[in-house]
Length: 230
Image (cartoon, rainbow, N blue to C red; front, side):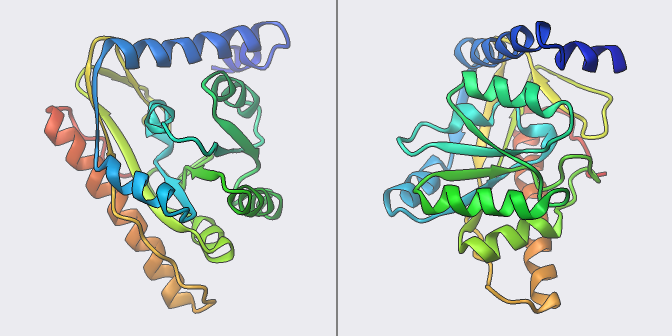
């Protein structure tokens, strides 16, 4: 694992592997039978210029860039740990921007980047259980980002019939080419601009429950084994 990370952060091999990762994501999308469920929810928000933060589990982030087919740019929050540069380059090859930082580490810088992107008419993606877990547990920093930016939270997930689930903290899901897959968009969740701890916790739990529900739903539709919340 350590040697693999050193290769990914290598000035020579890192960009090559990032390019290959992006090409693999495209290959899986183009060869598979994918559908986006409730796509009209995101489309309506974009058409109305309603700012939103797309939220998806860290283990279910690989295919999410393929769901973005709108003119405004999407920027995904990527942590500043050593894997971040690799992920950022791969997303760049897919036409997705990145914001450096996380809502738990370097939070102030990340929040500024999120607010700046949303105010410029772009949209933001966050892994609310990233960068290091606990798995499928929403951090309060995600709620703070919505409160301070005025954006609604949009749960998004994906599932694949044929896939590899890594033995990692996030149970990262890698679909195989020629598989059947679903990207599902949930209902937007508004967050009140309040410092009341009970309201913040209620919003955090609502997002967490929504993500668990739609992730369980797509896995069941595809007959895939569920990756229980950690």
